[in-house]
Length: 155
Image (tube, rainbow, N blue to C red; front, side, top):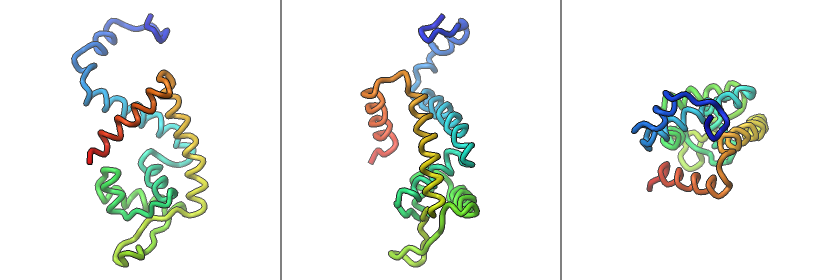
């Protein structure tokens, strides 16, 4: 039995202890996959997935991003952002408004319904985060967040 109390097979141990099990790129990708699966499951009850939740979060936060800014920040193709915004707009959760600083561009703003849904979905997302990080201390959680910020925003 492992320290977690689950029965482990030698094959799983061998894979975890392999060279790939210590590869940072692999570990980040695996952690991302596990996190996305858990987040998408929790957000499904709100009709959201991690990507649509991210767009709604930025709109609800008052950041007033353009679609181009969303694409760059979320590291998505602009066409993916258009589809995400269209879906949220059809549900009356966000609105495209003319950017007062550049009348050729639109900014994204959450509606009252969008802010309400975001508040509920954010609770579900936080619960997932706490569940996934249940084995780390608050200090380790803070350190992990800081290290991930360094990787995510190197400039």
